[in-house]
Amino acid sequence: MERAGPHRTIHRLIGLGGGVAFVGSLSYFAVSYGRRFDAPPSQSGDTAAPILVDLLLFTVFALHHSVFARGPLKAWIRRTVSPSLERSVYVWLASVLFVITCLYWQPVAGTAWHITGAAALVMTSLQVLGGVWCVVTARRLDVFELAGIRQVFGMPAHDTPPALDTRGPYAFVRHPIYFGWLLLVWFAPWMNGTRLVFAAVSTFYLAIAIPLEERELVKVFGSAYKDYRRQVRWRMLPGVY
Image (cartoon, rainbow, N blue to C red):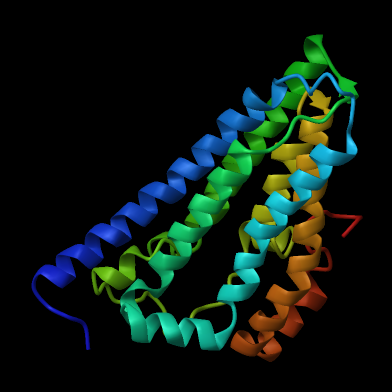
C-alpha cells in the first residue's frame, strides 16, 4: 500500500522530476551530437585510449538496462522505496547515465565523411525525420507509464494486459524507435571520428539488446508476438537487420 500525505507528494515530485530529467537528457544528447562532438581530439593523435573510454561509458549506460531487467532488483526497489517509484528510479538512473555518457564522451580523430551543399541538407533532413519518427512512434506507447508518472499519480493503466501494437510504424519494422535512432546518428553530414564511434557503439548495443527485449515480449504476448515476428521480418533496419 502507498504511503499517504507528504510521502505521496514527494513521490509525485520524484516522478515528475524523472520525466523532466528524461527529456533533458535527450535534449543534452541532441546538443552534444550536433555541437559538442565537433571538439578536436587531443594533440597526441592516440585513438585507442579515447575509444576505450567511450566504450566504457556506453557500456555502463547500457548495463543498467540489463540490471533493471532482473526481477530481484525490481523487488528490492519496491521493498526499499515504493512500488510506484520503481519506474521513476529507472528513468532517473537512465537519464543521469546518458548525460554523463555524452558529457565525458572523448573526441576521436578522423573523418568518415564530410558532406556539404545540397546533399548535407538532405542528410540533415533525414536526421530531423528520424527525430520526428521517434516522437511519433513513442506517442503510440504509454509515455506517462514509461516515464513513471502514471504510477506515482495512481493513474489507471490503459490496457490490462497491454495490447500489442502492430500497425503504423510497427508494421514497418518491429522496433521503429530504433530505426529513427539510426537516422539520427548515421546521417550526420560531418561524420567525424567522435560521432562515428558513438553511432557504431550505440547501434551495436541495440543489435544485441533487441533479441533480449523480444524474449521478454514473447513472455508477455505469447504466440501473438511470434506471429508478429513472422509478419514483420525486419527488426530495426529493412533489408539488413
